[in-house]
Amino acid sequence: MLYKKNMYKIIDRLCKKWLTWYHIDKIGKEDIPMTKEDIIISNAHDLLNHHTVTEAPINVIEICKAWGISIFEDDFGYVENDLGSDKNKVAFTIAGAIITSPSQKAIYVRKSDSYFKKKFTIAHELGHYFLQHREKSKTEEVVTVSFSGDRNPEEQKMDVFASELLMPENMVRDYHKGKVFALLWEIADYFKVSELDMKNRLNKLGIRYLEV
Ligand SMILES: [Zn+2]
Image (cartoon, rainbow, N blue to C red; front, side):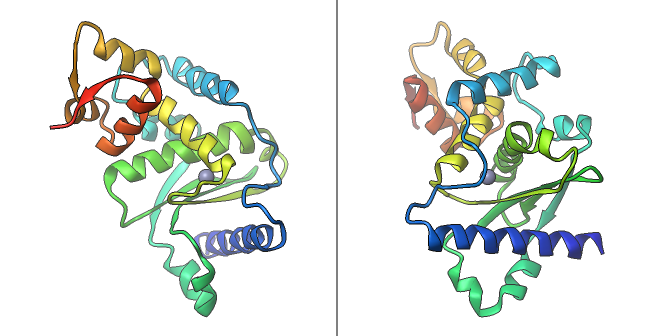
């Protein structure tokens, strides 16, 4: 029953998100205050320090366990079936969702996604938890749905949190110390992230790499 209820909460959140999109000119206006990027990054580091994580790969499942957050895989079929013809309105594919309240903390990831994509989604949803849900969910229920490739500024900031958590800047720079070039697949393998996520990270940090 909890599963069914949670899927309805995801549908409800989606409908609210659509309303925001259809009735406000710009995509990106959300009801949650925006957080500055440096605060997001320091939050990711605080979390790593809290768990005394000093080397890659970062185990997001263990972090979730420690905070009492359950992880579920789902194909979101319940959501899509219920939406019926309305599902055409979904401009993006649901990548994940997070539902938190005084009685539960649950992250949902898309079952058909790759292992690395799921891992990144969990890290992204942890961003929603630590930056938005944590305080609010002590007294009320908070539901957030995330789409793949959503360019909404709020979602992009959660990706910043996820990147920092899975590929912390200091660890990425340490890995490159003494190397003229590093191989993309090797670094991605070391951090156990997708080559695409690592590529984005290295580009953002201005670190050179070889794609072979
Ligand atoms: Zn999100």
